[in-house]
Image (cartoon, rainbow, N blue to C red; front, side, top):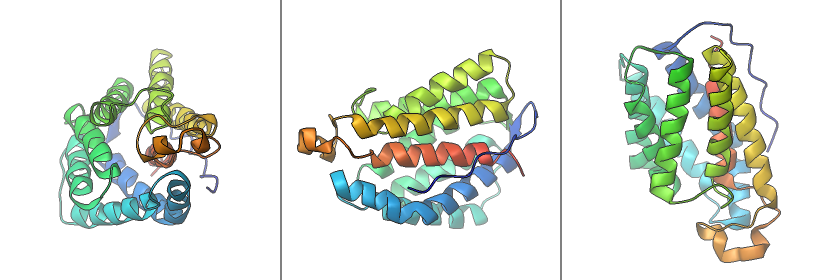
Length: 222
């Protein structure tokens, strides 16, 4: 996959608002559309080859749905993403991302969220992925991107970083986690049928998870 843009410094604003959430979703849709071929190629190597196209279709539907909505909270934006992805994205990705966004929406149902709120959002998303997919770290799934992202975000918040820095550090950790799946043997999902032959390929879900977190970090800068 092509190298994503580096997030801006994002300033030191103490909170993120609904406008940030809308920019995040718009950037995510843009990135997924641009990377859909690369994501599907990753999936074709160890899965059924439609991850990028499925996500692009889902986020296209999310963009259309948000144009008709007037969300008042960060959580309302994420809930609309969740319900739309669940109804438009097939395979495992729809339920996994739908549950992740739905759990994240429940902990961010406010007009703004602070640095700890960002940590809670990522934590809830990870819990959603784990509850739906029953995967753990090292299984070569999207958990391998979300888990290091949560650890990095928690450290950043404990360091007193503002939300922008928390997201930036989470995104960097997610990308490193996704890259690390190259050397893993898949233990969950369709890729697990390949056994040792799955080694040497990046998990497409981990790659798309890193893409989404990078979009969230970039969205801090208007």
